[in-house]
Every structure is written in structure tokens, then in C-alpha cells.
Image (cartoon, rainbow, N blue to C red; front, top):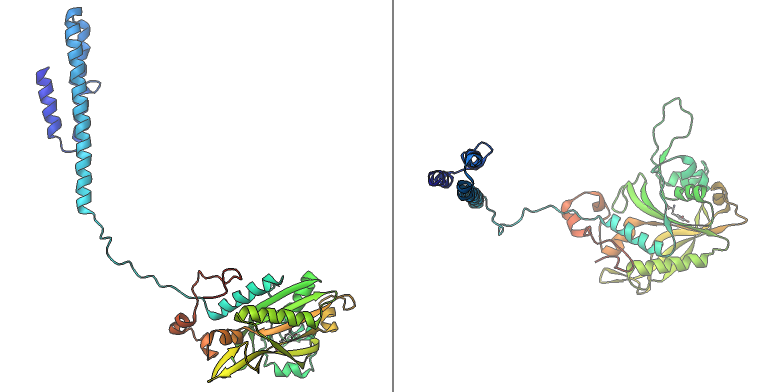
Length: 356
Ligand code: DAH
């Protein structure tokens, strides 16, 4: 028994991997291992002998098993130490830089405007940018002979030469969304429609694509007074300072009466200040929706009335954020975008603040 013990304890001590340990285990205490075979011989012994040899064999088996377990743990520790020596990480190295984009001022302002109007109960509505001439013109009381069509610098979509139907257009304003929303929702209605519009015009203050936001509120007794309140409320929230408005009589085919709206401002040393002084700056067109327009939208003008307005988003973005050149909005110049862009996680809300 001492020979067996010496033989296996030495072999276990000398083993240098788990496979060797496992074959030693089988050899010693496996079903047909040497110790197990010895145990089988107990049956042939006299009771006295058995009482002496039995416990010794059990003790030997236990001793070998625990030597195996201890060696196995030691091998695992050694393997781990080896890995830890080989694999290491310098946590003091600087991280890899990750390019971070910014939110374009136009997107930012659309979100700001939406936050303010949502608070006054206006929902957002959208329409297609390729529009039929019915929605872009006729339904808005701009018949084909009307001079306003010529003044709009419209982009026309191509039709096959033998196709007599009037061509589709790139919408020249967001006003067609008024008609689509009236058709889809009926009255009462309170919506704003932000989006892209197109006109064939390019100079310092015009780009062939730009952005507008349309407003429409219809109910039983909505008046110009409601329009004035809504707009002053809007500009005051948007510019973060009390802003007065001035309504000037004007003409749009889709409103009667019509007004152009100016906001109060001043010029100090060539610097524009909104909401103070006694200069005025034109920012939008508006009026009471024309009965013909209501009818085109499927709404009875004897029962419903209301106001509409249309405003340039790029324009009010330039005014609020002091951006001098409109064309730079659409140049995709990264330096410009980093300078005038907004942090993506700063979402404009009335309670959290519209902008930083
Ligand atoms: N659609 C007009 C334009 O693009 C702006 C406008 C004026 C919209 C008066 C309106 C409005 O809804 O009532 O110049």
C-alpha cells in the first residue's frame, strides 16, 4: 500500500497537465484502477484482516483523490497566472476618437417650432414634395391664368410628350398640405406643416430648395385676433423675449383678408435685435382661409372658418442664431456644421429649454 501511495503521489506531483491527471485518476481509483482492484480483494479476506485493510484502502483512495483535486486547482491557477502575464491592457491609453455629428440648424428650428405649437394644441401634418398642380395651385384658389403661378418660379416634373395632363410640380410652398389635411381630417383642425419647398431661384437670399412651416386652425369662430395671439405667443417663446407683431394688409389668393406679419426689431451697430426698438422685419404671410379654399378641402365655409399662415424656417433660423448666409445652410461644409450645429441629445422642449 505504501508503494502505491508513493507511486501515485509522486506521479500526481509531477503531472503538468489535466490530461495526465485524468489518466492517473483512472489508473489509480477508476473502476479498474489499482486501488479499486485491491478493494475488490477485501471480499476474500478474513473479517479481522478486512477490518484492518478496508479503512487503510479507503484512506488511500481519499488521499489520492484529494491530491488529484489539489493538483488540478494548482494547474488552473498556474494557467490563469500565465494568461494574466501574457494578456494585459493599458487602461491609461487614450480612447479612440469617435466622430460626432451635429443637428443642422434647420432641423433644430423645426423641432423648436414644433415644441411651441404642440403646446398650443397644433399637431404636425406632412405632405408630398412632388405635388399635383391641383393641390399646389387650383385648390388654393390659384387658377392656371393667375399671375401668382408665374411668380412662383415653379419646377415642373417631366411628362411624356403625348401626355396631355398638366405636369406635377415640386411644391412651391407648404400650403397644399392645408388642403390634404382638411380632406383627411375635416374640421375642427389645428395643424402645422413643416417641410421642404422648391423654387427656381438662386442668389444671396434664395436657394432652389428651402423650408417653410404652414399653420392652419379652423373652428366655428376663429378670427384674426386668435391669429395675432398665436403668433405673438409663438415668437415670444421662440426668441425667448416678448416680441410684438405688426400686421400689414396684403394679398394672397388663398386668404381673405390677408396680412403680412412683421416682428419688432432694432438695428444697433449693424446688429439685429429682435423684440426691441421700433423697426419691423417681415417674417410671414397669413390671413383668414378663403371660402373657396375651404370648399376645395371639403369643408363647409358656412359652418367653419379660421386662419392660416406660412413662414420661412431658414429665415427664422438665421434671425435667431445669427447666421449671415442662407446658401451656407446647404453647402455641407463640416466646419460650418460644427460651428452652427446642435448637440444631438439636446432635444428642444418647452420645460427643458428650446436650445443651449
Ligand atoms: N404660401 C405662401 C408663400 O409661400 C405663404 C403663405 C401666405 C401661406 C399666407 C399661408 C398664408 O398659409 O395664409 O409665399
